[in-house]
Image (cartoon, rainbow, N blue to C red; front, side, top):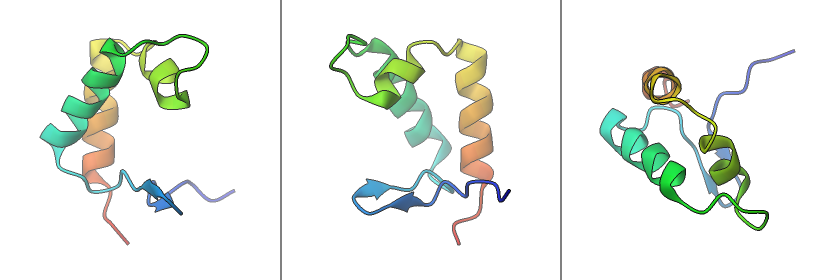
Length: 67
């Protein structure tokens, strides 16, 4: 099974090769957002991340090359 490239789709912007600081700010912002039943998938998922999870994820995504 191919690994997702995090390049986005249709109206969803890709995460691959985004700036580290931008990704960090966005994920931390999602954690502070309301994670209630009507929130987005990203908000619900990000609310469960630890600070270490966020740093690891951002490091990975920022290191992916845009294709």
